[in-house]
Amino acid sequence: MEPISDAPTIDAVITSYNQKNLILETVESVFNQTVKPSNIYIIDDGSSDFESLEVLHALEQEQAIVPIHVIYQENLGVSAARNNGIRHTNAPFVLVLDGDDKLMPTFLESTTLLLNEHPHLVAASSWLKTFGVLDAIIKPAGGRLQSFLSHNCCPATHLLRRKAYEQCLGYDETMKSGYEDWEFFLRLLETSSDAAIGIVNQPLIAYRTNPTSSNVKSMTNRLSLMEEIINKHLTSYQNNIVKVLLDIESTSDERLANWEDEIKHSCATKNEISTISQKFMACPSYGDGGMAAAVRIASNLKSN
Image: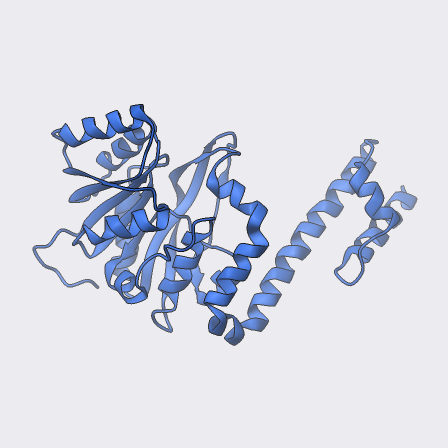
């Protein structure tokens, strides 16, 4: 456990860029925590929108139940903003939160409990309840380094252990096109052989979804971003190559099976399958399970 002292237990870092009034909802969700942070640091990453800056100036003047400190920087990217914010904190635990998301009231209570009870955890987060264009529950699993090498297993919003943050030297500020949080989690998990990230199995993060968000747009560059991450953590990938490949293959198999079931359902309900599916059935992929899926689909069609 963290040593008990007179120092504050939790500080909160919220990153902001042209957030307008959305950041007020985010700050309010921090105020409403059953376990409150000692300070809230809002890092504005060079906002150019007048309304957004007016909201931040008003927050600076507010006599809030948790002291708010607004720090302005030029537009350097979210990694630089998070590092800047964390440098201003002095608590053993630091909440990292995007300025357009919200927390359920027990997020800090639940994640703090995890970190206090499990010293090997370098960070903790929870499931997400999405809102905006998508209404869903997202269930990241957390885990150790091996699990994170094939895909990110933790939301960007999380509670981290300062000691581990200092060991891994923070976020990589050169990563400005996406996946900076995934790369950072790999850094955290490489700080010790038993390091892990814990997840509370409840949707305690309200995550705003938008097709123009950086998280969604970064998927168009997934392969190049993954190549960058692999090169930055090459030793970890080399040491865990079998686990990584099997994890990726497992995900591929699951998606192929789901697609196969969708085609069977369409055929069973007399709905025409898509042009893409028709092309696949005419010329299935080979060596990745595609041909086997096509055989099962064709067999199912003939039996019906």
